[in-house]
Image 1 (spheres, rainbow, N blue to C red):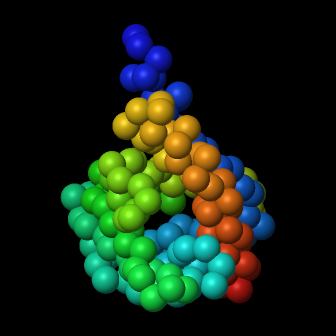
Image 2: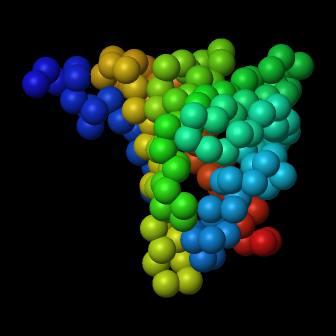
Length: 152
């Protein structure tokens, strides 16, 4: 198998442990009123345009940038296993297109082990996205998620 086709070489991953039960982290990811509270880097407001949470359902979130432009995230759910995983196609325009995102939730007593994968079409595109600030951007978003779930 060519290296470029190997999903592992095309994947960027962030892992966190949240100090709340998996049910609360799941709700934060699946309820539109919750998503609007944490989705996006600190200081950004998110509007939920569409959230059809089922396999084949579409989602679309719009974030207002400080300069007045819009950052649009959208995709189609491809796999949902309640309290375990959510897989979706994803475009984050204008920066990232044609990726798959995977949110994986694992119960750890009263805590939640969380893994977030972004699978890119090519290894080169993956490296480009990493250099553009993948870890800082998503890291900031998951800091907001951590703060939000602690209030549920």
